[in-house]
Length: 101
Image (cartoon, rainbow, N blue to C red; front, top):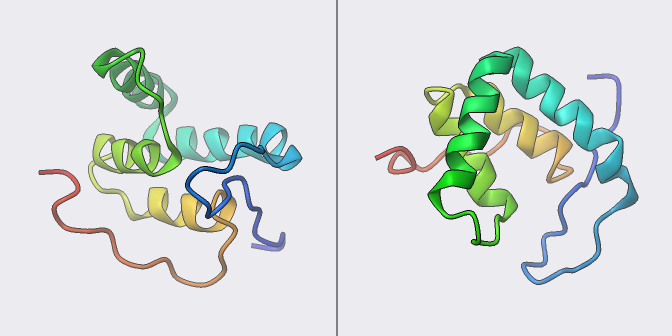
């Protein structure tokens, strides 16, 4: 990738400030996810996630895990979150094998 990583989620669990880049780069993240899993599968996965508990606060790690599993463990989901959401370079750490149990 020619662009530097983007931080869309603070590493602090209780941070209440959304980086401004979330409103531009965030759309690109969902575009990339739709390219990986397909637009219909992404929509279905997002609908399924909200239906689990529509009043529950949705955090970024939960979103990543859900999409990783909905896309049958596709490694690119982890890579997208690692670089474009968590703002990290290099290879992401492996996914916990129990994520999709």
